[in-house]
Image (cartoon, rainbow, N blue to C red; front, top):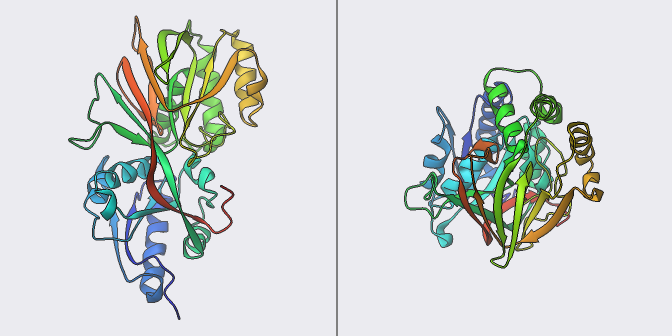
Length: 327
């Protein structure tokens, strides 16, 4: 039987992902690779024990051909940042077995989520694509999670304002053991936070070093893929290998009922028709908030700062996608 092409493989699994189902999924994946020796040349399985573990483990994987992140967008985000600490010529490709609540990066890649058997089948009958990544540094986090790095990489989303507050709230609720998942979790947090009201966060945004926009930010989202929040199509045209980031931001301040309606429309990407919202692409974005700290999240994790420099990193990382990937 010919090799299925994963080569020397490292699996980094978050056992706490998907309300603890990640542990069973990791065990199942381990048994599979032990039983089917032709699937890999060698494989190692590491379970994360605390935040940032996946960064350290992935950053030491230069002797591997494939690193597989098993869990939600959080462990994938850490694995991406660990891999980006490796020189490009020695950098393994990334595969994912998505076991999370949001699974937005899995949606971008077209991977089946919360079904480890289906994800394994997709990895073994796969294609490889090279994707771009976003990179952000702030006045409070200039280096990012890896010492000496130019900032923090993101594979899917970076956002500011109410949607960031919502994402941070969903992360908190998952940590507290909520049974609500996916878009329902995002929507229930949205209703509570938006209903509390906000006057917005004044900021100056410079897009591609030329266009300066004064904003009172309720929503400012920077996307490498089309969705966030468990499938909300905030930037429906975003493609992760086109050399551009996609932006969505408000240019008017809707009423609370109107804002909730726009969030509902974002589930299908129909909010883009509103005159309160602007969609555009960019290669760089510089944002400075003037009078108070604005909530910010990166792939679902909180990021602190008042000044942020964002840019696209083209052709940054090889990823495994299903054979029928559409981009």
